Length: 321
Image 1: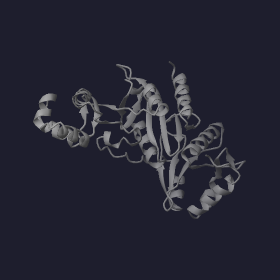
Image 2: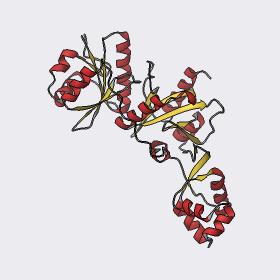
Image 3: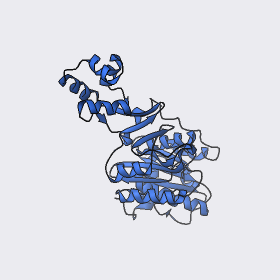
Image 4: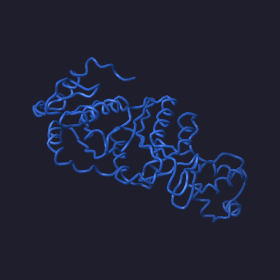
């Protein structure tokens, strides 16, 4: 399957699952292909044939964007260099969860979450330690008796009951022994426990061309988070209201207009305003992305001045659902 066809299939699946899906981020470089929202759940999705091409820099940016936009970074892919991705399994690359299209279909469309995750050494599941301990006591088995049945140490059984995850083989054996479900599904929207405590990567330094705009926005009261692989140059957060703005800048040409349209679409999905700083603007906006001339930005005194300007130029735009 070509990557273009795969992207089309995944976006159609998300739409069928009730997501509002953004336009494809058809600019380079790009950390994600589409943003999608269903209710309060927002995902930033990278779609790949071979997930081994997903590098650390892209993973770091997707995780940062997930933090700033209250979204879950996610990769949907077909295979690694060595094998196809298994259905019902969550993989991880650079701290970002990875699903096969079948697993994504089960999760988003059918409402069936994955139970298994891949980690160094094999495939694992999350054991509900309290349920396991209750089942063992109801059977009147000691830790030693259960350890013997599983072929593990008494200490290992104790760790299972304390919440340690188990291999798929052990989990299957436990459910056979007690004839009851003992596992938690993997929470794709909150995969922090599977990242081994990896912190969100630090922001990159702003590029030389970006520093003047970063300085202006910082002066008027924004935290500015530069990006390297997105259709926007930064995500800017109001110090007081913590509302994100997607921020871009360049000479206004066809590429800039394309980026502004993508920013508008992504902003609609993530419920964020977008603006694009240009030398000269012949109109107020491109879709929902407000165009602001550099001289206007430099005259802004505080964050509320900027927000007033954005409201003024989008007052006749219908609010997203």
